[in-house]
Image 1 (cartoon, helix red, strand yellow):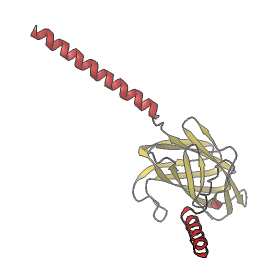
Image 2 (cartoon, rainbow, N blue to C red):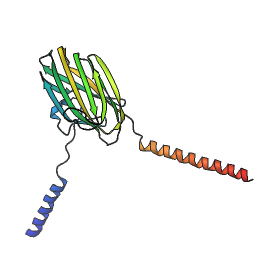
Image 3 (cartoon, rainbow, N blue to C red):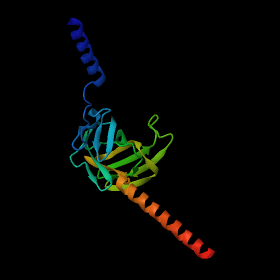
Image 4 (tube, one colour):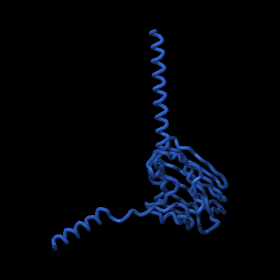
Length: 224
């Protein structure tokens, strides 16, 4: 009896080790608060996962948050970033923001980025790379390089669709500058649904049959 109990307990413990605890749910990016607290799990929005946020301010104390206006508009996944910096206004300071974006399903559907900068005396340079940054530079796989002055916007399409991209923003705070928020869009190209692919395949097959019948009919006419 003791041996049976011991065996049952051993199996139970083994099951706990194999199964483990349930996977931790990844939060939404809407109102996700301080981005540096998201860690490697990050947050999700509109079929994309955003993670490994890093904020490096120089000349100011600064934190970056994800606000409640983060949303999905058509094929664009828009992150609403909010910035708290001290002093404000700032004079000749700099904030570096890094993060990684990846499609949840692994499909290469990232098509481009867009940036709206409503800041005063602030220029944001956004560099997007297909490979991790090396010492703050994109040594290979440059996808986009935007320089956006205050109260303006700019967008760029990638040379090829991507499943993952590494993003670096250099927020340059000039004399008497101030910025409280900015918006970054991450553009997706729609991927065909399985039903659509099936319909396309059926249509192509039907066209193939029709063409073969047409060719066969002409051959018979020529023989006759």
